[in-house]
Image (cartoon, rainbow, N blue to C red; front, side, top):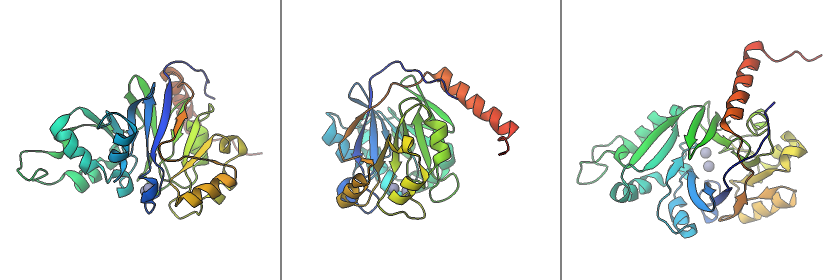
Length: 276
Ligand SMILES: [Zn+2]
Ligand SMILES: [Zn+2]
């Protein structure tokens, strides 16, 4: 059981877009973790994300980006980010990428001799690549990364800041993951369309698989249309809209998170108790 305590900076999460891969009118599904209303970590960078970032903030580029998986509605803006970053902030933007995805991301975007038509540039020159497995630090906070259920084993990853939020990325329901990484009242931002699919959670899944206590702090995003958002809302869930900002609880300290992870590791070694 995690020790639930609060402290520190004023955090919020703002959605730049909330649409699924076909709902470009709702923006590319992505969000920004803000520190005292200033943009910090961008989660995912789809085709519309950078334009929406500029529209929401008085600056061109995010200081850091976490990539959840390699579908183009989540990375389609990275090439644009390269061109903007290479000429203005070369090497300054931190790109947190799950280690499992680094080779595939490199093959998709970076493995070419003429990233610039005049040559002389490597894709990674523009960024500070930080491969991540279970953890990463950003702005003195310890984030946790976990695989979700979307298009294959270890092909997509969510991110959580203990005490503050869990961001599911694209996924089917992941009750056991939410119970593990959002055990202290965190806001749970969750993939939720009106209709389910083999790779995404739908409203009936969320209603069936999550208890009321989690549904009460769940915010749906990555849906099909504005009408779908209204229908999800009518069923009793909170629904994120483009540009909407959510205040977050203060994060847990890193020591509490590491202790909870150690507890988890112990439990997995011993095995779960048998049901009576
Ligand atoms: Zn998606
Ligand atoms: Zn996806």
